[in-house]
Length: 386
Image 1: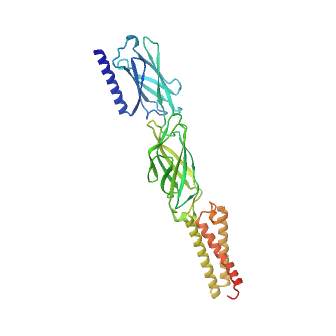
Image 2: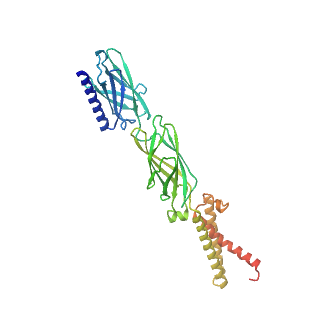
């Protein structure tokens, strides 16, 4: 009776000690039975179980089953630990546990390992049985260049001053690990285009948003070898600067994405980034405003010059100069049209290269200058007495 109580107290003390060790080092613990008389507990830090770590510590504790007498022929000894399925994992004993039943090993994780779950074989010997083998899991991961992939960002052209839903598609290329997305930051090049974010579909609850960073609570979990789509509404601001207002946005406009996630094994990765080219154009109000300004400017100049000519305040040389200026403006319009590959089909169906308020202004300006001349001819034709 005393021996059983002693064994029970001893087993309890060992369990408490290993539990304290696991909590202190954020380690993971696996407890498995060996036979009717012993259990083993294997402890290592998942955060440190990463590809390229040459010094991962593994502790294996042999724990007698409390209250069960152990025959001498069934006492076991841990004689070897190895990863039989991969040569990139080497295990070396650093301290023996013949007296304390605690064995410490150094696990060398090679640089060419894939992040997945490997099996370690623990081999025990006893006088009664020649060998007993137990398998434990070794979850190997990485700290950077993980297996979550941003496949594509599907979007329509972005119109400033409105809201556009963009679909983000992710792929989990891990073989064994689910991934948990906790944060996504979305910005733009040039900056100032994104004025707010809202998750429309693909996440539970209502994620919070702070400074263009979406915080997912609960996290988005993607199972191994699965894909997931996330619909996010981009709230677009106005034209960021006067230069953008006049010249519009070039072909180098981009959405930038930064993703924070973990591999379900206490390893957080923050290096998943991506860029997606986008088409950005001002709102219809901005384009219409630029057109109206161009028309007003061209019409005003045209009528002013006609007024001065009738009053005799401008000579033929002045008219010739005016014609020269008009030709120069027309040439500028042609060059801009040629370089920008402008194709005007209808104002409501502007080609995306035709999204620059400056171009719209010049076209309106030139149209007013030349159009007033034909309008005057038409008025003289329908009202010859005026």
